[in-house]
Image 1 (cartoon, protein in one colour):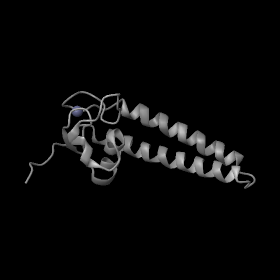
Image 2 (image 1 turned 135 degrees about the horizontal axis):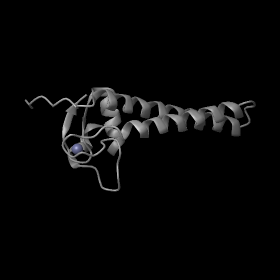
Image 3 (image 1 turned 45 degrees about the horizontal axis):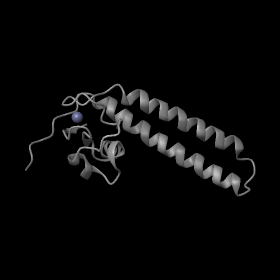
Image 4 (image 1 turned 90 degrees about the vertical axis):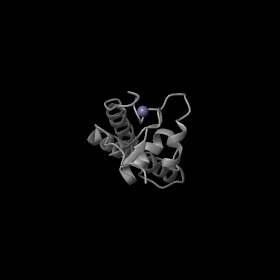
Length: 124
Ligand SMILES: [Zn+2]
């Protein structure tokens, strides 16, 4: 048995951050799908493509603003902001998604994550 993981001090922020990423991915997929349909000749989708793309950009901006507002207590870095360094090896197994996206998926699905910078684990 592992000892219980410590609770992330900014639980509400990282959960909102993870949700904002899921919304961002949704609108990215939606705008790509609508754009594909429009290029295949389905009429009247131009406005919907622009709306979905705008929603994608807005949700992405919300993610960036939220991501920069919480920090890992152990290393003081932002767990959903990845630089050019490879993620900490302890963070690789938390999701099939790599790096910061793995943090997002793990928070959304299991309410826990491993910091990609230092490998510290938290409950959210
Ligand atoms: Zn850390």
